[in-house]
Length: 307
Image 1: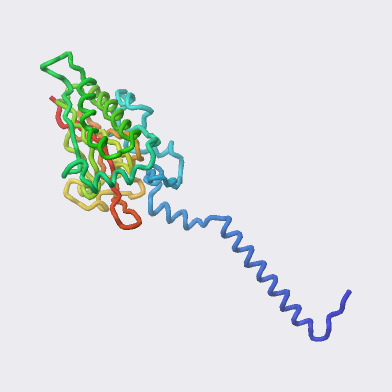
Image 2: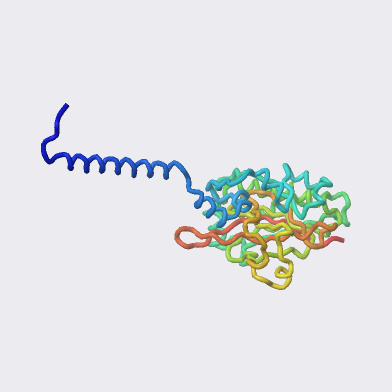
């Protein structure tokens, strides 16, 4: 046992106090790192909305999952299906739209899509389209499958001349053929199907609206997909009288978004039946780090009129 020298005791007491203070600060910092702040989580929920955040898959970025996907899918305005064949089931009559969630397998194609826009590969309107007769009155033996096959091959020709990844081109052909047949079976009295391959950059439908025709199937191959609302979350007075988006939506946390590659079917206001007219809009524009616009490649299959 060592007796401190005279005058050393006050210094030792101060030194011990400093050590205790350092240990306390270190402990608080450790706890702050290990335990997420609730205020941060609430801020995320307020900014993105639980429903919108879960059903949005950004390019290669992991989504912030705030609740189970199953709950979101059953709560949304569209019926989640395992395949497009499910769209033919009677259960779909009770929904304003249907969708098939998919994980994109064609990789990151953003630079290829931006090149389509930059060099005007799809023309001045940044789109190419093909009309497909659902029923050939001149030749009843000509099937919708055959009509679609010919049209789809013509539709993707511009992509073959611009180094677009083969896997994406093949996926677009498969989607147009497969989804087109199902839509024709759903609506056998349709005059025609209109296939449209479009680059969407500045030309987006940024306001909430309903399509004033029969129906549209739509697939977004890069970037975010179409945003949707349940009818009970819409102020229809504002919607029909050109109100602003912020006034049309009652609860901004309940905006639902199709993911990259999802196959979405939207019923327009003239779709047969009482449940139709899905309220939707294009997602907000996104930009690269250098400020340039991020373009999206879209496939649309439209039915404008029934005979």
